[in-house]
Image (cartoon, rainbow, N blue to C red):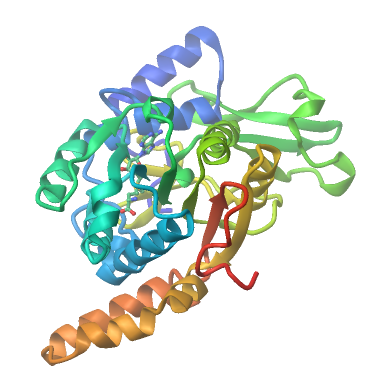
Length: 372
Ligand SMILES: C[S@@+](CC[C@H](N)C(=O)[O-])C[C@H]1O[C@@H](n2cnc3c(N)ncnc32)[C@H](O)[C@@H]1O
C-alpha cells in the first residue's frame, strides 16, 4: 500500500459517501464497490483510463494477441459442437478496450459461417469504453450491439466470453466475532473525516450461506457475492433454455474459503480499498466453487476450473507463439515470447487466473476441459 486512506486526496465520490453515511449510517461493501466502479458520473469505469502503461492495470489480451486468438478458435470449436447454429449470440461481458474481441474475430474469420451466423452483443457499463470498443471493432466483420443489462440480450443459442468481468461484481464481506458473523460495512473513522470499515450490529440471516462459526475463528473474513450469484443464474438460464457455453476467465480460487480478497489498484500498484473511491480499480477474487454450484442449481454443467496456463497450453499456446515468431526480427520474437510467458507461467498470470466453462445440458465438454 502506498498511501493511507486519510492522506490520499478526497474524491467527489468520497465526499458524497461521507455525507450519505453521516445521514443514513454505514453502507455495505457491495454498495461501496458498486458506487466506486459504476457511479454514472464519478465511477472508476466511467471517469478513468484503466488500461495500459498510462492506466492502472493490464489484462491478458492487452499483453498478448495469442490469448484472444486461441479463445476465438475455442469459440468456433464450441459453436461446431452446438451443431453450428445459423443464428446465435456472441456475447462479451465487460469488453474493456475491445482488444479481446478484435483478436477473437480475427481468428474466427477463418470460419466465415461462424461470422455470418453471429450477432455480437457487448455488455458494457462505461460510455467511454463503448466508444473505444466501437472504434476498435470497426471492420472486424461484425457490427456490435451494446446491452445495458444481460436481460436485454435476445434469447438464442449463445457463446459468452468474460475475461476479468466477474471480479468487478460487488461482494459482501462478513467478519467473525466472538458470538458469530457480523457484516463488514463501510462507515466513518473516529473523526468522521474519512471512510473506515465498521461492523454491523446484528447477525446476518442464517440462510445466506456463511461457513459455520465452528469452522472459523475470530477475525476471519468471509465473502459472498450475491451479484455474481444472480448474474450467473441469469446466464445459466439462457444456456439451459437455448444452448451454448460461457467461458469465464478471472483470478480467484478453485474452492470457497475464508479471507479478505478486496483489493484496489492504481498506477499498477496496490492502493488502500477505501482511499480515493472512483480513482482506483476495485476487485475481489472470484469464488469458482460458488459459481459452479449456482450453474448446477440452474441446470447447466460446469467444466473446470483449470489454471489459465494449463488451459492456454492445451489450446496450443506454444505452437501459436512459434508460428507468430517465424521470420520476425529478434526484438519482436522476444516480445511475442515474453507475452506468451506472462499470460501462462505459474509465477505470472498462469496459476492465479482460472478458466471455467458453464455449458448448456447435453453438449460435449468444450476443448481445454475434455478430459476433466
Ligand atoms: C477489468 S476490465 C476487463 C476488460 C477486458 N475483458 C479485458 O480482458 O481486457 C472490466 C470490464 O468490465 C466492465 N464492467 C465492469 N462492471 C460492469 C457491469 N456491472 N456491467 C457491465 N460492464 C461492466 C468495465 O467497464 C470493463 O470494460
